[in-house]
Each structure stands twice: as C-alpha cells, then as structure tokens.
Amino acid sequence: MKKYHYSHALTIAGFDGSGGAGIQADIKTFSALGCYATSVLTALPIQNTLGVQSIYPIPELVVQNQLNCILSDIFPDAIKIGMVHNSALVTTIAATLASYKKCPVVFDPVMVATSGDALITEETIKTIIEQLFPLSDIITPNLDEAAILSGIAIASVEDMYKAGALIHKLGAKNILLKGGHLKTPTLTSLLFLEDGSVKEYHFEKYDTNNTHGSGCTLSSAIASYLAQGQSLETAVAQGQNYVQEAIYQGMDVAIGKGNGPLNHFYNPQKLLKNELEY
Image (cartoon, rainbow, N blue to C red; front, side, top):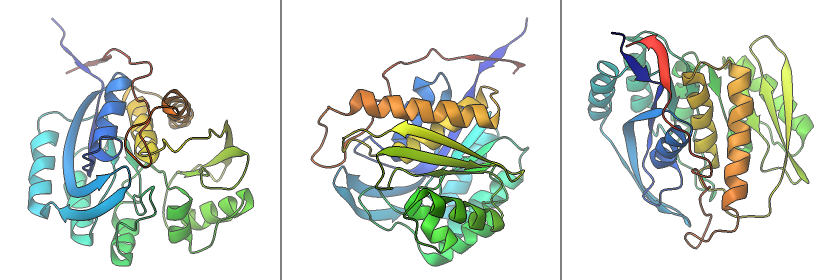
C-alpha cells in the first residue's frame, strides 16, 4: 500500500505575539493554502500592531538543533526564511541547510518592520548577501529593503527597475520587488528572473492600515505554491493574488490600534496530498 504525505512547508522566522506577521503569519498562510506547516523559531520580538518594542534572540545552537530536528524527520517541499537578526544566525542557517538535499527556498529579507523599525545591522545584511542569497531561489524585498540592498532611493517604478538590476548583481537569482510603498494609485511589483527578463504585476491599492505581515504572508504563499509543485512564475502570481484578496477581505476589521493583520483564512483549502511516496 502506498503512503503519501501532505505538501508541506517549513518556516524559519521570528515570532509575532500579535498574530499578524512572522512565524504566525507563515503558519496561517501555509495552512490556508493547503500545506502542512512546520517551523523553526529564530527570534522573539516583543511587538504588537503598533510596532516592535524589543527583540530577544534565540541562541544559534538552539536554531541549529531545531533545524536538524525538523529536517531529519519531516523534510519540507519548500522553505521560507524570514527574520534572521544577526550574522552568526545567518551562518548557522546557511550551513545547516547546505548539509541537506536542496528544495525550493523563498527568502524574505526582513530588515524593516511595517512600522518603520529597523530590525538588523549592516554586518548582518552583508552576511545575508554572501550566504543566503546563493541558497535562495527567490528573494522578496519591499522597497525599504530593496533601497538598503541596492544603495539607491526608490521613488518610482523606474527606480524599481534600477534597484532590481543592482540586487541581481549581488547574487540574487530571482527577485520579487514589491512596490506597495510607492505613492501611486495602483500597486506595481516586478519579478526579476534569473534569465534577465522582468515581469510586471499591477494590483488595486486598498485604503486600509491592515497590511501588517503582508510581506511574511506573500513569501509564505509563494513557498506554499512551490511546495505544491507549481513553477516559480505561477507561484509568484498566485501568491500575490492570495495576499491581495487577504488584504481586501480584512481591510475593514479592527484588530489592535495600529497596522492590523490580513484575513488569511478568507478561503481555506484542505491539506493536499503529495503524489510522491513518503
């Protein structure tokens, strides 16, 4: 008798006690899209919808032990990496993942919170570029993060094209550059592919503050679709559509006094069986 496993994804990310971002948003997204979720905790930020108050790091050895424990038992169909707050942690994650077989990796380079709070140092950014970019199939920076990585200010779609080209030169294979922070009537995002081509996406902008965790959700949605066997371009397109609808379905709900969360479960899917034998 054949045995099957659910399509499943692993999140390596920080905590969000308010439930809208970080590892909580990742698990919600995986679950809502029909993936079994596993997780490794990298940091314990103290935060709510108003912002990040402080961050307590998880020791590197603890992160390494978590990774080995999960990867040796429930190897994922895709991995999402989120908040990595110091260089030692970056090195630990990169070295541990390199010792296992390859699966799709989506890296959301979390550097600035929705509230504007800086979350990592320049040294950590350098280590991320050197060690995590080569492991990642796609990175998903927002405009603040893209500005840090590219070294240029981004105030237009034209600037986004310039920034994407510069980030490509840093070693990123595929880049989804999210333009939600531009002062434009519509939202534009750009997918820079490894072959040098660029694909544009355009979405309606909603008048809401409920976008807390949208970046975490998007990267997790892409990982979910990759885990289910979709191509990168399809996963990116479907992931963005999911986030767009999750924002719309939660735009008029008041949770907290600041930037509220998305409605991750507006259309929950059943866990999907992977056709490969377990």
